[in-house]
Length: 384
Image (cartoon, rainbow, N blue to C red; front, side, top):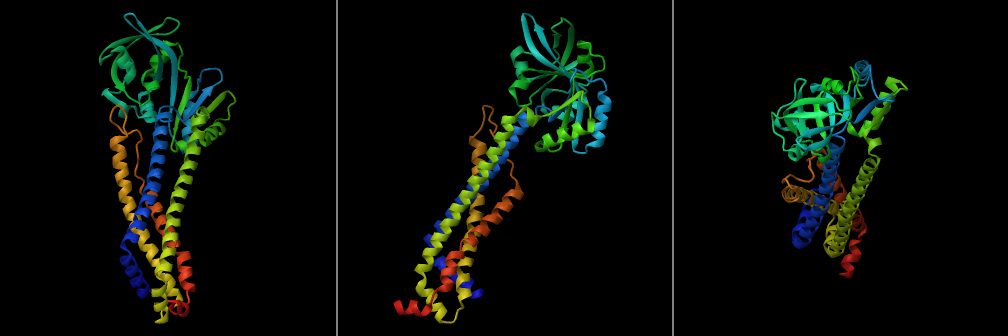
């Protein structure tokens, strides 16, 4: 094994340009494979945060438009489903804000303060002011603020289609990252909206956040089974965004296919170059065998070569990946200077990919090693 390793290193040093080209080829393949995987994962998370993150992952509606026993339903779901992260009774209504000569349609949403924060992390999304704490206070989306030129401390008058009025004091402005939400949502205390539309202590729906967004459809079925009530209708974000969900599955499959063929191209290049190397080194291998080196040791030379090339190529590939991410985050940005896709460095994915790449590179030496194993030293020396 020691002799094989020593000879393998000598072969690599002797053909420096060839060695460099192989390492560079592996590095490019590895970097593209890992970067595409990280980019795909980041894109998926970005889309999920914008779509599923700004809407309930699972929602319970009543067929008659109102839920009277929402407190009992909420407690039952939390008690029996450990995968539920948060639940919140909600009262939704259409209204419009009247400012001077402007009538702006809005969606007024009533939550208990602690519930809306656990569902949407509103506190972390408030960029000016604070979270509402009492009835009579309201927080408004970023785009709606700009459109109506609103400021902290302003009072706004909300009117229902029936002409009922509610005056609220602005205490904060939020940015949930979606123009549709930022331009329409007006969030206030649950009791304020209940009083505005004469809803008593009822809710229009119960919104649920689950621990795993991807399994929202399974959690929806579980909630349906827990409630066992035909008067209630349970929906999840996947059902409401079927094209998006199927598109994400398709995108993930395409990413895996691209990664596979990038890896395959790198492996085939190693096989072809090492195969040529066997032919180039026929005489040296023949002499080594004539001197007593075993067939297995002769074959092992190429496995050592491939392993070294795989390790060096993967290491350089990781450096390239780091440069890709830095460049992407710096130059591929939106109008606010933020990256279009939030690439999260998944160390487990990188480690697994690196191991697979090194193993594939080493395995690529199988064919050249077999040729070396079968090489007859007598014929090589005889034929020159």
